[in-house]
Length: 95
Image 1 (cartoon, one colour):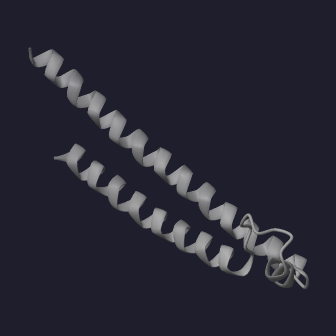
Image 2 (spheres, one colour):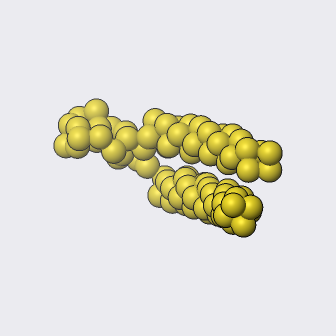
């Protein structure tokens, strides 16, 4: 039951942080598009008056959430792995 609980926590956390990150990327790309339409008039209009401090701040925020998400995922997966190993050892010792 502990393993199932850890797996559920990992799955829920991964889904939550994935949604948060996807939302943040979406909002970032709405304000700062980086599509293949470079050198077009519309693309140039968006980028001509970009506030560099605001861009840098939003980009740092974006990379921070990605790093936090990755770190959280690794910790939760480690917990699942440790519990799985513990259960496997108990099964081996029981046989």
